[in-house]
Length: 151
Image (cartoon, rainbow, N blue to C red; front, side):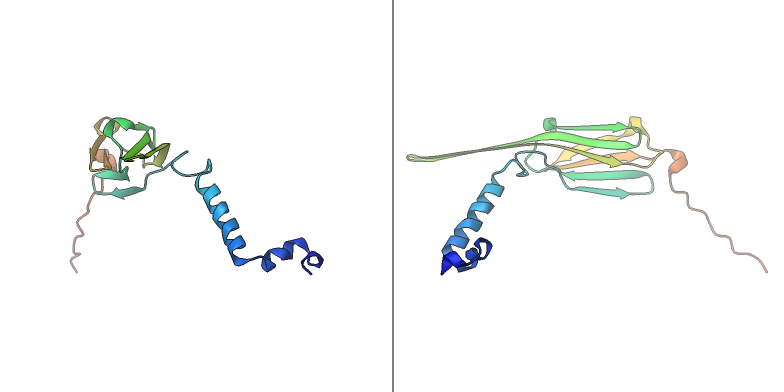
């Protein structure tokens, strides 16, 4: 009976464990393929906020060291790049596990014109990179007092 059914429909007649095995193999292959995030390019999450006097960029780079990160400002583009290296070793009796994960990243963030490039600062603490881009005096927010008009 199975041979009379078109090939593409046969999978519905397979044992449920065969379908499960095929799906697990597909997931396993995709998990360890070249496209896995820790084997190729990786990008940290970034928050950008603006205050009256500056633009602040915060990037989450957990597990990285300050020396593995590079920050540059070219024109109106802030670039954060680096390389994430992670190695874990575990040994118990005859059991030994070594895992290595590497990945490079580069994030380019457009910033508004009017940044004082020579006053940009970057601070790294607890896996968070904070970059402060001060605005020039001309681009800072100026509050204007509203006068009450006499009748």
